[in-house]
Length: 428
Image (cartoon, rainbow, N blue to C red; front, side, top):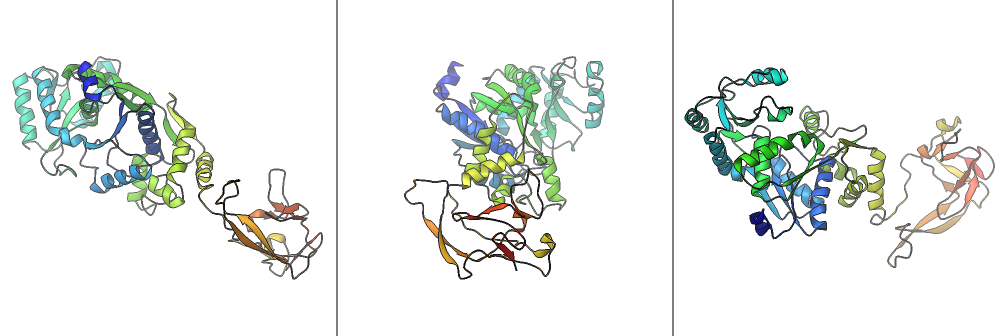
């Protein structure tokens, strides 16, 4: 701990550690907001670290997009790092664990391991669990040199298969993947797993606070077990509730399926809550961060939020930077009023038909007292147009738009009672 404090100067260090296997979404925006925000609050720094341990799913495209998204969200990483830059060090640690008899090369198939784990504490140890240390060292070197095909050999940690926590059941540390890596190329044919890599890199980067979502809570024991066995610095781990938006998909795996299967136009489809999709929908970084701040951080397993809350924060951010203009996109038509022939405009019958008034409207109506709050002119004539969705023939108490015989107000002007053929209104 003393050496750690010397290296960090006693400052907080956090990290935002995405896997580069897809585009970021609103849940990642919350993770960014929390990790960068809490470090900044206490005078610390934050890494942008790519946990790039699976070349099967990772692409340079995703890496570039993540860097761009972090910048768009207004965050400035202290350093940008890659777990793959430490592959040699991770390999050395693995060799050291084998020498301590805390890891072994196993030849069980993946499906056999899963079937065995279904037995819980009654599961049988791997047939290779107690193989000689020198044999595991020899086989691990053969794995590195490419003698094994995918699935033929793995390195497992020798933990406790009788433990109450399944994450202590001899988890996999290394596997064979015969394909190039987007950052290291074809230098390696064995790759460390996320569970093996994540805690070690946290330690090597002197992360003081490892902030994760609640689904990682039961991995805390294996996290600390591995750091204890290697005998390196142990960060503080703290979990918080994962963000979900009602009636929306935030699983990166499911989002990827929607994109790759062609159900949406791409990662920036405005129907998706990816950061790119939100940007196309008109959200600003300020609005997204405001939403993350409003949701806060809790220990609930999942934090559910209505989409309307996100829109509210988005509008709030736009309110002071988006100058107002008025337009009727879908004018009221006669069929909605059960009249004929078709009607596309409404005529004010209790004013001069030559009415021509310049009404001043503020660019930013809620920015009262702002010196540079400019105004624009809106022409008011005896003929007006009404948006279709803003009018009904009949309405209940929960409808607040215009309807027959209601009082209709003109923004920055006056109001009149609505009627089909009288009370100040006529239809043409």
